[in-house]
Every structure is written in structure tokens, then in C-alpha cells.
Figure 1 (cartoon, one colour):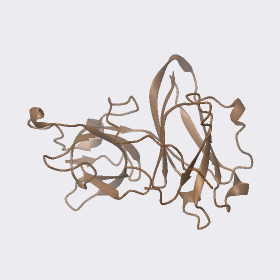
Figure 2: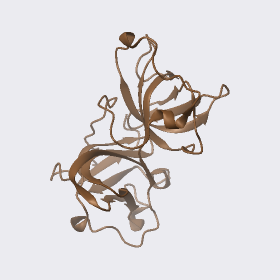
Figure 3: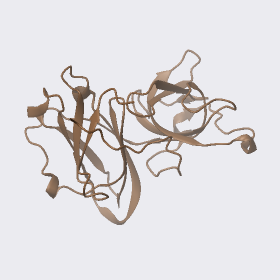
Length: 237
């Protein structure tokens, strides 16, 4: 019997993570600051997908809180600049809800910030899989599934260059019930301090296969030597 992964994820209430660009770089004609800050009772964060604009010209973000929970649509008060943020991009959104609206409801929001995070897609045509012992360790803070996405929050050395993540499928397991995936990271010019890093990796090319009942993700987790692999099953709400 497969044991599902122990997953920690709520609404990601936290300080804004140092990932990328600020909201006003992306929004045109936006009015994102609340008129009465004293009325704000909670600030939320979610990893969401830019789903395009509605008929009123307002941009929409969509997320599943965890696993296969219902799809939630958050509507911004302005429009994202698609020259800088393409439809389908995964973002970290920090926002407040209208008075009386429960978390997890599809609604208009007041965004505090929008940060582009690392986006990637599983590689299914690799001829070899990574040697996990020789790869860079990842201090995993949170690793969870949101629909067909695998979301990672980690503490990793800062880099003056671009940090990359790679999710590789073992091609020999693609037709099995539980395909094997390998999550690794690399960076150029690592600095001497750690910072919080977020990545969202699209597993759809594996996850949407008819034979797939879940995936096992292998990761060199320096936060817990006993959790070097996690299994994520379908229909696990």
C-alpha cells in the first residue's frame, strides 16, 4: 500500500518571499492599495496561475489550495502586463479579501504584491535520471501538490546568477501506477547566506497519463534525512 506524503500547506501566511518582481511592474492602471488599511484583518499568500483576463479587462489568478481541492479564481483590480508575465505563469500572490468573504472563495481581491517564482515542467524524455547522492541538497520547508503542480518552498544559498530546478521522470516508469520523479537544483555563483526560494513545477505530462495513480518524488532533503522521497496520490483532498 502506498503511503501519501506528509504535506504541510495552509494559506502560506508569511512575510513576502524574495523571489522576483513587484506588483506595480506588472499591473497597468491598477489600484491595489486598500482604502482603509485599519479594516484589513488578514493577509494571505497563494501560489497561483495567471489565467488571463476577464471581459472587464481584469486579470485572473487561479489556484488549488492543496491536492485536488476546488479551483479558486482570484480577480485583480488591474491587468497584468502580458509582455512581462505570460498567461500560464505561476506567481506568488499576497492579498487581502473583501469583508465577509471566506478564504478559499472565488472573489475579487486587493493584491499587496505579485512575485514571479521559478516555473518548470517535468522532463519525460531523459535518457538517465540524476544521481541524487551527488546533487546539491535542498533544505525543504514545504513540498506539496496543487492539482498537477508540485510546489516547493526551500532554504537555499543565494546566488548572483539564476537558480534552476529540474524535475526529471524516469522514462522506464512512465506507464506504471506510480512514476518516479527526481527533483534537483543548481545555481551559479552561490553566496554565503541562505534565502527562501519557491518553485512550482508542472507534472501534467506525467500526472495526466491514464495509468498514473500518483507519483513518487525523490529529493535530497537536507532538512529531514528520513524524507528523501514522498508519494503524492490522485484524489487526495
